[in-house]
Structure formats: C-alpha cells, structure tokens
Image (tube, rainbow, N blue to C red; front, side, top):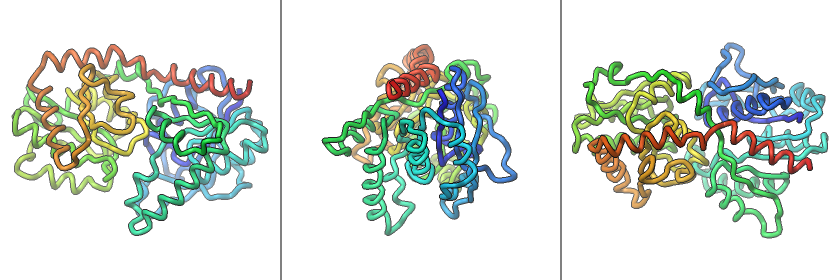
Length: 397
C-alpha cells in the first residue's frame, strides 16, 4: 500500500507522538509498504535523530515551519497552514491509498483535504488529551477547551476510522460521538521495540550519582511539566525514604519544571537521594532507565503512557497512579502496583508507601520484574503495526 502519515509533532523533537509516528512508519516500511511522512521541516541546524525504532527510514515531505513562542519546547516546530505548500504537492503526487493523520489541526486538515483528493480513507490516531493542557491558556482555558471539544467531535466524524491507544480513551471518544455516528473507534496501542530494549546495556545510576551498591533506585522518565506530575514522584520518594533509607530516585528528562524540582531535591528530606539528569537522547535515557530497580509514574494526562511499556520491557516493576491507559500496561500485583488516584492530598503518600513496600521485599520485586520482562512481547511494535495494517485493509476492502 501507499500510505501517507501526517503529523505536527515530529523528530528531532522527541515525545510519545513522535516516537509513535516514527515506529509506525518504519514498521509499515518493514512490511513492504511505501510510506511518506508529511511533517514540519526541522530547524536548519537540527541534527537528524534516531530513536531506536526498527525498520527502514520513511520518505518525507517537509512543510515549512516556525518555532512556537513561549510554552513550546525548543525543538517543537509548527507547520505554516499553506494548503498548496510543496510538501502537500509531493503528498498528492504520491497518490496515497490510505491517509493517516496523527494530529487533528493544521496537518489534520491537510490530511482530510488530501484524502478527499486521493479518494482514500482518512484514519486518525488520537494521541493527546488536549483538555489536560488547558492550564497553559490561563483565563482562556475554559472557552478553549469547549471549542477544542466541539472541533474534535467534527473531526472524528469526518474520518473513516479513529484509533485510540487505550481502551478507556476509546470509550470516551465513542461516548462523545453522536449516537447516529458509525465511525469505528479501534483500540491499537503504540508498540515498542521490545527486542531492542531487552538487549540494551543498562547504565547503573548508582555509579553516576555516587550511591551505595545496595541502593534501591526508582526511575521516572518524561518531560518535566506540570501535566506529567513529576512533583508527585519526588514527594512519594521522600515518603518512601523515610521508611527505607536505601531508596533513591533518578529523574530522566528535562522541561519547564526542572529548576523547581532541583530545588525540591535539595531540601533536607531528599538531599543526596535524587539525581536529575536533564534531557537525554532516547536510547541513553532507556539505558539509564534499565539500570534502575523500580519505575514510578504519576501522570494523569496520557492516552497510553508509552514509557510504562518501555519500563516493563526493561524489567522494572511499575508503581503507577491509576489513570488513563495505565491498566492497559500495568497488571496490578503481577508486574507492578496500581495506586488509586483519589483522594489527591494523600496521593503522593500512597505512591511512597507502595515504593517502600516493594523496596523492602526483594523476592516480590524480583518476581514482578521477571513477569514484566517475560510478558513484554504483548507490547511489540510488530504486533501493533499488523493491527494497523489490518485496519487499513478493512477500509480499502
């Protein structure tokens, strides 16, 4: 098949969306399909980024882009909304049989136009809970959320199929579509390179931080932003360390809250117990993750929580606050612990107690680690790509 993938979030900026698009493009290419990715052109001085996805690199149709001011990460580029840009012309000349959008906005509208011109089905993967980012809009958060919700409903209704990365998101989308709408909503999580993660050479954070060899290291990985709840993890580790002096934390990633979290880590109950690495290339981040003992996750804004699958594949039992997509990855009491989200004031304490319990019980922790690693093939990118391929064929059929 000739398949066009469109996205607003793309390499060299690294996020769950960019990893998902890259993995799907390469996975489809490995299965013999011809793939063209339509994405914002990187900055002129941006280096090519490899994030470890298996398969051949796709072709690209670049859209002229600009750097969003203020809240956007430095490498995040936004395409100009020019329907007759050279990138869209290349996409039309490609004559796609399937158009798959990964954003509903600028490139999503372009994808819809391209699908109509090519008489191809439009598939959309809903990667982001946009309402969870309303705090960046300040006083415009409420009207902005209402407008976005109405827009999304119309966009979903114009698709041949919608993909949701988790079961709870699929149910939410179905509930928000009109009762008369027949657009299929299919659950297909983003896959990961399980085989690649299994052969990573783990980097021991104890040596980097100067911690004792018997330290029980908790890792968390992701963008350090308010919506990811990294502060909850620091408070949880402070609680756990008050019960077990061996507990340590490595925070892998950078973001707008990094300075605030460093200041918290310097306080008396955490000083010497926390290492913040700053932003790292993805494969380096995963190698450091693999050197830890436990993984902690508190975000309430995910559609899947891709890093949960990566941590489990690396053999880390996960302590995760119950939320969107969590139970699609973490099996409570099998390869991790799922902690109730409410009540909010005692959330960090519950996560901390779960960390301390597993830190103290090496036998239980080891059994969970083995189950996490042994059962990780359920996340394999090859399986997920085949599911997407079957969806494409059903629409064409």
